Structure formats: structure tokens, C-alpha cells
Image (cartoon, rainbow, N blue to C red; front, top):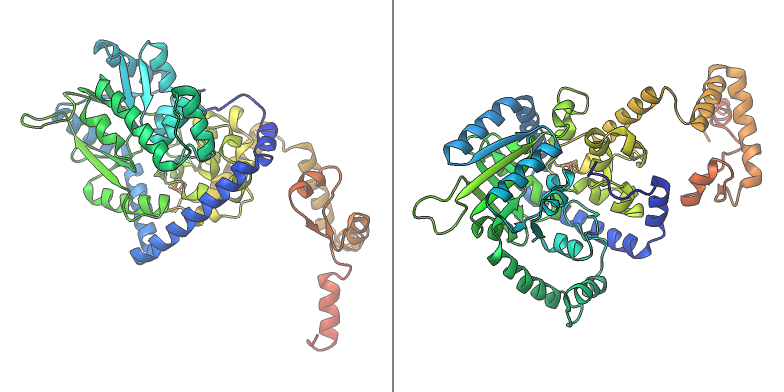
Length: 476
Ligand code: SF4
């Protein structure tokens, strides 16, 4: 499954993430900037909670009526001279795309950022079929130059790299000889990419939202690269997840307002592009041939289940930007092209529990993600739902969890055992205590204390304190 990044086991990936101090600092500082930007932008907008509710209603309504809107979208794209292909699987989508490229004798493909194309492994499929594919989003291009290093964030894919590392990649792969100054790096990338745009036969884009009642495709970018991808090559292919749709421009307006503020704290990103059909007579640019590939790849199995709201996601990454687990382990630890809280929810649904069963446990369930989500997806509740499914599927929890739950049940079901247990616990914990906290646990406790401290239980229990207090007439 192409959603998977790397083959190393989850524990190893996490260990690697935890020991990468550069990545952790970069993520912490980016999270801080994004979070502050989001809060300021939300405040400026007025009643943010009302906007979120509205966003949730739009996504809920659209998903409840998805078949209707997809049909409407498809009809309108056809009316404007485009072709629509519904792909049930990643393979079907790739087959269609490579077929279009081959029929056009496409040697070079320029591409703007698209998560669904990563999900279906489109780049590999195009390369295998003999065409060259060039990423034109700056972050994605850096990763491509670095031998297709996988993205670690859904909005800023090269978040794990600093400017010195980028300079080295440019130097080694393209003979770049200037400094690590961002302006010089960006100017070099611009010159290189300009050549690619001008010599490409095919342009491929993702889709932030498709507008059902006009058949338009909307793209939100910071660099304007999607405009060149769609304006210069004669053939354009747009790949979209089947849920990325809005009924009309009215709903698009609201969701884009939420997306840009939640993603990077901007009122608008630099470029919001909307394209409808093929080039008309008299148009100076635009594709002569347009193909919209609507990808299911497991999404219809989620419809009607307790996980349906995961499809409301507008890929803003606000949940990733507040997640304390992501901050410590970084994007690659998730082993999926979708990292962070939304990745932990989506990856097992789209890629299967077999490959992603650890991800629902990579969360403290603090609910910061749910609170940040602009379309109010109850992410932490969905993670608990996943845990339920996993336990039921495996017919058992991990041995230690089973044992501790059994002990907990026995202890809390009998007043005398509860009494004895709560008296005994502080004494058992005492030898491990270091000034009232355990920082070096043993056995299963070690995993906990490796990354945080555990308070030692007090000798005086709440019930003893309460009894004493009641005797004194309620005064401490
Ligand atoms: S789950 Fe919500 S916060 Fe996370 S990426 Fe999707 S829309 Fe944004």
C-alpha cells in the first residue's frame, strides 16, 4: 500500500523521531507560529465557533448527499468539455492517468501538491510507465531532489529540513553554489522550475474543493505553482478524493476562509485558483484537454459508519499543528503519508489496521486536535473508536493492559480490596519515588517514565481526608 512510508517498525520510527533534536525543535517552533497565527486570524474573523459550526454543517450535508453532488459535478465537468473518471482503487486511478499521458505522448509531467496522488502512489506509476514527473510545490520539489524523501506534514511537507540541509541537497543534486539564504535558494528553485513548466506536456493538480454546481476545481496554494501547472501544458489532469466537494461557491467561500486561517493563520493564502473546464475560444491559456479523476480508494467504505466525519477533513493541518505527540515524534514516525491526529484516524481506514494499528494509540487523547479542527471533527473520539475496533478485532488487548484492567476491576468491585489497595499503593511506590515523583520506572511503567514523570500516591487518601474534614465540621 503506497500510503505507507518506510518499512521499519513503529517503535523504531518513534525512537528515531525522539532522538532527532533538530526535527523536534523545528516542529516545536513551527507549531508555535502556526498556532498563534490561527488564533489571531480566527479572532479577527469574529465568532470563530459559529464559523466552525457552519463549516461542520456544510461538510456533514455534503457527505450525506455525496452521490447527488458527485453526479452534479460530473455532469457539469462534461458540459464544459472535460472528462470524468471514477476510480474505485488506486490502481484504477493510476491506470487511467498513465493511459492519458501515454495517449498524449507525454514525456514530462509537472505537478502541483496533492495528498491523494501521494496516497495512490501516482508518481511511481507515472515513472514506471516511462514519463518524468516533476513536483512544483517548493517543499515537495526539495523532497523530490532529495531522492523522494517522504513528506512529514500535509501542508509544509519539508518541515523536517533546515536551510543548510536544503542548500546541500541543491548543491549535490544540481550543482547549486550559492548560500543557504532562503531568498537565494528560492530564486534558484524558481529558475529551475520555470524551465520545467515551459517544457512540460501534461499538468497534474490535486483539488482542494470541487464545486458541484459549476464543475469547477479550486486550488489553494502559497506559491502560484498550480496556476502555471494548469495554464501552460495542453493537457490537465486533476486528481481528487471523492469527498473533496462543495455544493456551490457560497460554501466554497466559507470553507476556504476556514482552511486558510486554520492552516497557516492567513486571511487568504497567496493564490486561490478556480478553473472550469477546458480553454474556451478566445482564452489565452488553459488546457485543451481536461480530465478529472475522482478517487474512492476505500472512502465509500467509511460512509455510513461511525468514522464518516473523518471524511469531513479539509486537510488544513490545524490538528497536526497542536498535537503534543507529533511535536515529539515528528511526521515520519507515523509511517503514513497522513501524519498527526488526522493521520492516526485516516490511515487505518484507508490503509487498513494491519499496517496502521499502532497509530490510534499514538495520542494522549488530550483533545487539542478536536478543539483546533475548523470543521469540528471529533478526532479524539474517533481514535477511541479505533481502539475499540482493534481490541474487538484482535479479541484481546495487549497482555499488560488485560492484566491491569483485570486487577483494576477486582480492586474496584470489592470495597475491602479497594480499601486495602489504596492503602498499600503509596508503600509499593515509595522505593521508586524521587521527591514525590517516579522518574525511573521499571517493567511496563518504564515506557511511561521514559518520557514523563509519574506522581507518587499520597499516604493520606481522599476518603481519609474527607472523613477528618467532616468530623471538624467542614473546616480544614
Ligand atoms: S482533521 Fe480537522 S484540523 Fe485536522 S487536517 Fe482535517 S480539517 Fe484540519
